[in-house]
Image 1: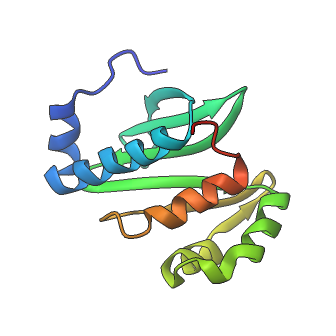
Image 2: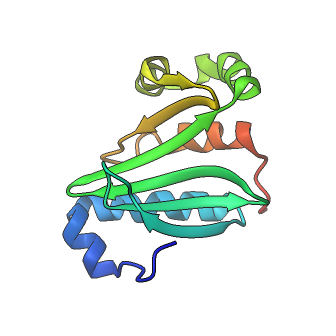
Length: 137
């Protein structure tokens, strides 16, 4: 858990104005669909910050920030990988390519997207809905 949550100006300085806007839009898109606990943390070796969406001890997704880069991580368990294949045709080529290139670990397939605009957000929301039904109207 992070003691000092980064301010808007800190995030803007880290990401740059256009990527900070992408970060905010993605958070807004998730917040619109999900009532979740949101946790700030350090980003480990590769990232400066981690912003995790979770509920009932289960993580929905994580956003990561480092200098001029936004990361959006979804971990797909076995059942979710089956669901992904079922909706693959409705997803963009870029999203499918990222999924196909991702590593599979003992706890699932870790897919890290690095959005530079909002073009893939509809697909991201579809992927999140496979993990957990939206709990906001």
